[in-house]
Length: 572
Image 1 (cartoon, rainbow, N blue to C red):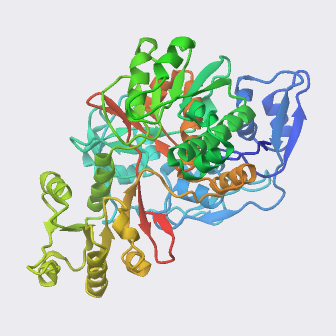
Image 2: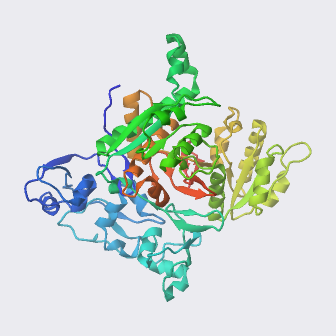
Image 3: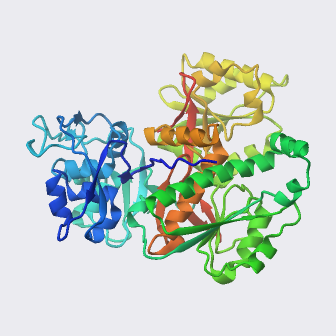
């Protein structure tokens, strides 16, 4: 298959631009600063496209130089609740770009009414937009969601304002004790955002930076990655051509493997373009529900110098792999399994646990000061027991003797002037239709949003009007987000160009898991420390590994909802 290697990917602090570039051959004695001056750009622009240049440039080295814009720089006026990330995404630039172009304006944090550069200002423009007006009013209001945060070692007021996108004045207003100085271990009230995670037990946030790992890649050492994928080729090779064709049409597990592998190949090709020093080997895991050849693969091949292993898919087989590689301390990444088993120190689950997905939804309810009412059928005892045990504040609607929802009782559970989240767990499509119709009618009096723990099969029943779900903005937790940035769309188009189909969730997972693994093993600190300290995000998946009772799981989740324009969006 012909591979056209042209992939542009978005990172919060790094982006590859589609704009035309100039190739510059470094002359003897030239420095980065001299080259930047020559092209009327900044050294930062050179480092962004040529990370190796940070260590200096050598004669005859080829550098990629972005063509300087000759047009007038674009100025943006900051709106209500806007963040640097949101503005960067809107104008297809990076957060680092905005910070570099607006150092003076952003010194006290981003404020409503500010005017900032969202494209590179030319040398003849003033350092700040001529209409720049500081806004003394704090951007926080009574509806802003707050969380508790424990101050870490070496943190300062300035670093906290950057972390939580808040001014020092606002931070002190929320935490008057800061007037006496910042101390390690202090618990502060801060705006909730995506750069931190929540400890389940005490609801104290722990710092976890979401970073671009590409900027800190160590290219001086060759790294080794192994993919253990269940192709089961030996079984397929004995089949006739007709049977093989039928396998491709009907064997869901084989198609899952092929989709994942197609995404992984895109990641490997992208790594080559970026110059990552990673050698990748792929082994065919012949596995069934009760057996596999993974022990044989490991015994017959040199795994001592393998920096990370992606796969296999089945939980029992991936556990065996991790156990066999414990002696080498090799990280084993479980890419698709939702199951949890042995707490192994080198086993990393990329699929968030079910309890984490549910917790993220209840965190969201709390952040919106929501009134939560559960409508749970009698057969959904597990869900009802979970809510009663973990969230006693939730109110419960009931069904009458005829099996119909008691609407009068439901209305007593709803609150006017407050967001009402109705959590529904129902197995019958006819009951879902009835309940959604009732809730739509009650929207005239109450602010209601429907929520579910997962998109279970009954919700896809063809007789359930999609308008019922979109009008109620059906909310659900998800391990994946919706690809919507220009760079993510480019990935989808490029995948189709190579494979003649658009990538499905398995293909995107293959890319995300493989690319993240390659970037982490290329970090100076290695995979294990990188996973413990940094959060990453790619096409559809983010990775935020945390250990709980010995199990290392990905805690990165998303909340999505059905919007009235028939699209799925991410809840904010």
